[in-house]
Amino acid sequence: MYQQGALAYQQTAKIVESSRERESALLMKAAASLQKVKDEWPNSFDDLQPALNFNRKLWTIFMTAVTKEDSPLPVELRQNIANLGLFVMNQTREMLLEPRAQKLDVLVRLNRQIAAGLRGS
Image (cartoon, rainbow, N blue to C red):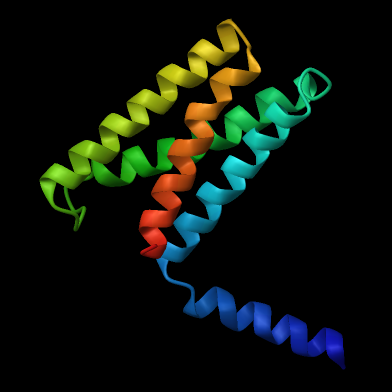
């Protein structure tokens, strides 16, 4: 009985969840993965690339969405998101070339701040 109720709630939550809430949750998931790698460094080195790949894919989706002609966002906001995406790509490349736990801080902070903005907090 409990399982059915939880399943129904999850399905309903997926339907009513706004794109902003979904984006915020995904950014927080990426930030948590990156933070875990940093916190457990150097034992987490095997988790570095998957965490960076997830974050990169997420930002690639954001950049693709804002560069489409039919994007409903204002041009200035679209440009800012695209610039942040390019920054993320550069930081990711730098991290892969010279891995250091401290380099993850900027990606974690950026994702958390954008997620907070999407939640309106």
